[in-house]
Length: 236
Image (tube, rainbow, N blue to C red):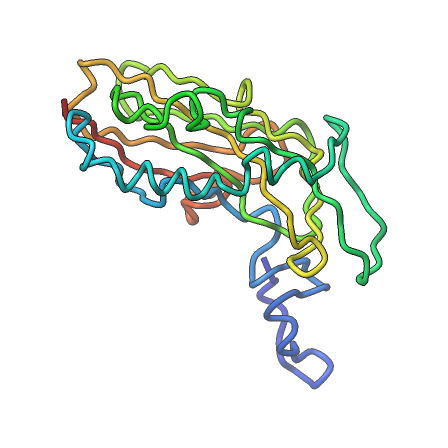
């Protein structure tokens, strides 16, 4: 973050209005550095409470996931590039050039794709949650980033990750901005919570973090920095 020593002592030191959007001196975007941005979940709720025996109770979550995944349908993704895995997809940095987009098909989310199970696991009490990173212009995370989720309870809750091991491939970075990268879609990670009957009727707090990279995820002053926490309760 910007140093407290940055003072408006003279005209040269006064930040322009543009600095409030992107500050080239500090590398901050909207007041935050790229490494300080967090995770977003779908369905669009931090409290996922529902009765698995009543489709009406979870219909909103299912519809939210289905609507969100429309851009990841094969008919849309076939228009995009079949990129080389494990490598950044860097492109010519001319502003006029429309950037190409790496393909991400919803089928790679397997049991959480909504293709084989249109309820995304909600009808069986083993719900899916989708996670994505915010779009950050120019971000190229080092290492091998992946999503890891934990439940705050004495005994662990079993989970499945799609794609395998919750990996976020480097080929989806960097992002070049809304104007140049108009058709860009973020890579997704799906987490399927394999809840048992013993875990029903309880409010479970789930925390998911970006691990394996230089992206920060442990600042107690910012609970959304490289992570997200949500609650889930399944009633039988």
